Length: 197
Image 1 (cartoon, rainbow, N blue to C red):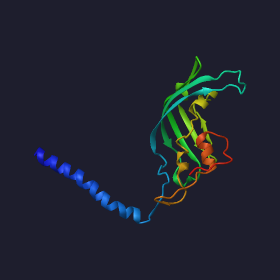
Image 2: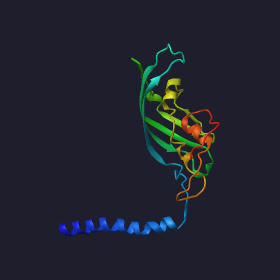
Image 3: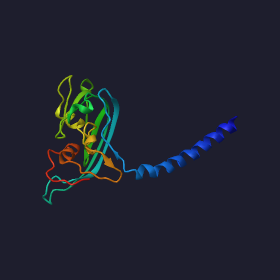
Image 4: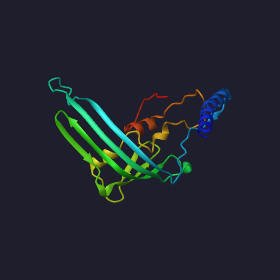
């Protein structure tokens, strides 16, 4: 009995890739177009994790007499995100987050400072507007500046789908990333000139 199951299992492992490979040219040659839009629906819940690791040199002044300092940043973040918007709601994206982990440590030369999110403000509302900025607040009380800077991450989950094309694309197509999306994803106020495909 074990031999039959093993043989059937191996046979399926060999035949399935062959059938897929035989069908692949039809998919590629058909010239079909595909929508790469986000399928997130209102009420969807997902776990988001992020890790930040930066190693570099901090140049505190353009004066060559002022020495450069070694810089090291480490951060870990994990939150559950409930989507509050639907695909037809327009460019605005809204969510409710619960941060399970949010902490960062910054070391400049021999001095280390750290920040973390207080337990009573781990419930966060987030809203991303069409310009790409994300407004973050806590319904349980005000965030400190350090807490706000801690959780206002680049490439946030609410605006990552702005990298996707607005219309259907074919295999091999490319599309330009709008400057508003680049600004929001990188945490800049604005991008006046950009050309990323």
